Image 1 (tube, rainbow, N blue to C red):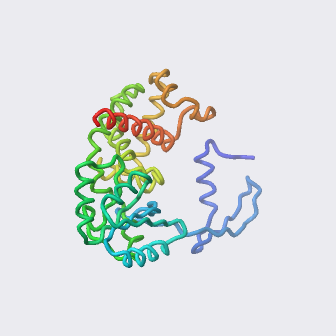
Image 2 (image 1 turned 45 degrees about the vertical axis):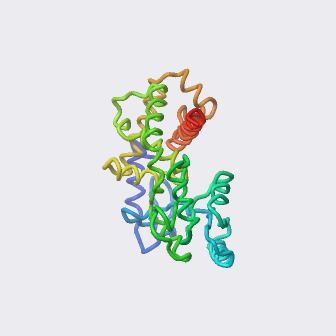
Image 3 (image 1 turned 135 degrees about the vertical axis):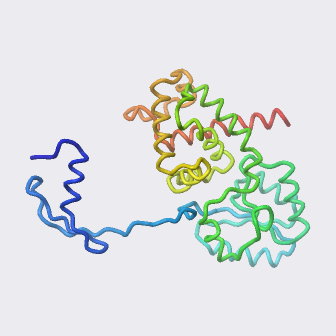
Amino acid sequence: MWTGCCRRCRELQLTNNQENVGNQYIDKGSYFSGRNPRLIYRKPPLIFSSMEVLFMQPRCFLLLADNPLTLAQLRAEIEDLGEETRCQTALTAEEALFRLSQESVDAVLLLPCPAADCLTQSLIRHPPLAPPFLLGGLDGRLPEISQLPAWFSVLRLPALAAAHLPECTELARQLLTALGMPRTLRAWAFLPEMAALTVVHPPLLTDVTHGLYPLMARRAQLTPCAVERRLRLAIESTWNRGDYDAIARFFGQSVDPERGKPTNREFLCQLQERLTLSARRMERRVG
């Protein structure tokens, strides 16, 4: 059976044997493969604009207002957005700060009240490492509850995320240097900032293809494909020429032995975990 000189030749041969018919195509088969003609259905491809991406919708909201009746009504509307959507409520800034310290909150919805201004000022003075969105405050006006999924469908960063970005970038640069990553690689120009973005906004790791790569591409004036390719080559070069003791200490047995190196997302998740621990230690020392 003839299969071509390489995998690419085989793919080209199969492509030439396919005839498109709307959302389905007819595979004409091939004499060499022995396949008969068949009709195959397929879903139409998803098309995204340059700004809209498939991004994780927030699952945990914190609603701050001084009217209990308004809180109850808006909480019911928010929880109707999805089965996994949860909403906490707070009447004072102190209660809101306590809830933010106890659990991870994706977005804080601020209704006009004195407590909202007090909470905003407190978060500006002491910004958390992974701050939430402040709708009705620093991140713009509060949209209608029904428009929240559309608002979060566009990739954004919380306004407070820039507070810890420089120090996390420096920590990422030191960690990559300890791993032995060559500074001559093209990914070195954006990888420290890319790792820092995952620390200040962890939801970026949910879908790196449609979230982190486009964001980093816009910041580095590249294409998402170029970001993914340069990151993959940087990981391969680090595993081939880096400090093996440091790699074993930081990554341990988390790398698939069959692949020999982590995937892009696995590498970014490990960096994010290490950088988060380092940033927490620095906050304790300063405090």
